[in-house]
Length: 267
Ligand SMILES: NC(=O)c1ccc[n+]([C@@H]2O[C@H](COP(=O)([O-])OP(=O)(O)OC[C@H]3O[C@@H](n4cnc5c(N)ncnc54)[C@H](OP(=O)(O)O)[C@@H]3O)[C@@H](O)[C@H]2O)c1
Image (cartoon, rainbow, N blue to C red; front, side, top):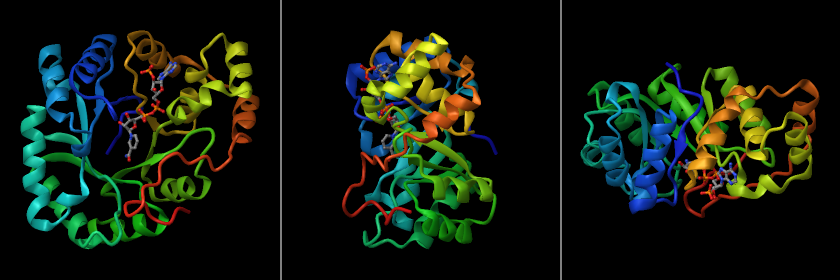
């Protein structure tokens, strides 16, 4: 199993905005696109991919099942609908979007349906998103050790998730950092700005390079071609031990996303 380390996020983007973002990114060399049923943009993403001319075999497409489709008799049908919108026969990675405790469908039911989707060849890999340690443990119990490719979680220099990332590492589960830029908040940070100046890099590149160097996958989004291009160069930025130690100290439990009814009790 492997999760590519650098991808494109598409949250909040629909219509022409997401079509332009995905097409620019693919032209610039991105090959990983992260979407979700709830983003209401799968059809736009599918259109952008088709128009880009990039062969499907070169792409890594992730989508996420929305909570209303967690029941055993709905999950796979909803995935088939997503595949049709994305104009593909399979996704590379399929995630449960939020644990949503109390939503009426228990974890063993939706995790088993997710595993079934993989068996049917509708997804190459499966994983979870926004799961805490206990729920990740329960998910592993249902689908088996080694089956969960990633836990996609909010993670930035301001929210480093030390306990959860240590557990995921121990389990061999790749961490995917979403909102690595804290939706732009970390871009104003003076410590990151200082490190960026030292390396003649941008602050966004420093935040992304920090996550990459910790072994996490990242999926920053942007509506601007120049930001898409410069973010990709974070792969070439090498931070030193002093930079990494200074960024480690920026932790402030700065969580941006925790929707009632969907989020677990965070570690
Ligand atoms: N699993 C989940 O529950 C979940 C939740 C949230 C997000 N996600 C995924 O993670 C992806 C990333 O999160 P996100 O899009 O919310 O936030 P993000 O990537 O942390 O930040 C995106 C914001 O940063 C700006 N930005 C990007 N590059 C920049 C640069 N080089 N310089 C200045 N500004 C820059 C963008 O503005 P411009 O457009 O102006 O560049 C945009 O406003 C999402 O798109 C989605 O795919 C998953």
